[in-house]
Structure formats: structure tokens, C-alpha cells
Length: 71
Image 1: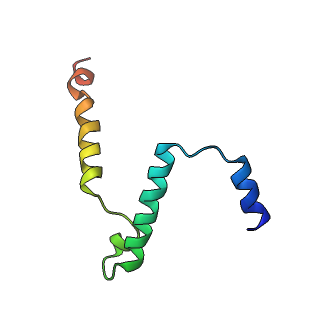
Image 2: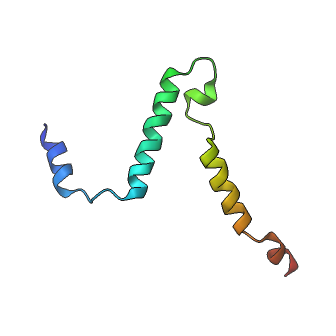
């Protein structure tokens, strides 16, 4: 193991669940990008999963556009 990796391990902060999830998503997107053929959006990792759609829906339903228009 090289010196830089050892120093990163020594001085790195513990992985937060969000950080682990982000790394997992990045690795999945890179695998999809490497194995997809013909669809440039998949190759660039630009796609939505059902989880992404659900999260966006929840975020948008929590925002009240009616209150901001009434003022």
C-alpha cells in the first residue's frame, strides 16, 4: 500500500451512511456506463431509478407552491 493511501486511511473521517450510499451509487453508475452499448445517457450514468423518482416525488410534494403564490 502506498504512502498516500495509508495517510488517507489514518486521517479520514469515518464513513457516514450518506457517504457510503453515494459511493455505492457512483460505483453502480460506472458499471452501468461501462456495460451499456448504444445509449449515450446510460453510458454517462444519467438515468433515474425508481428510488430516484420516489425521492423526487416526496421532495416535490413537501414543497407547497400554493403558499408562495398567494403572497
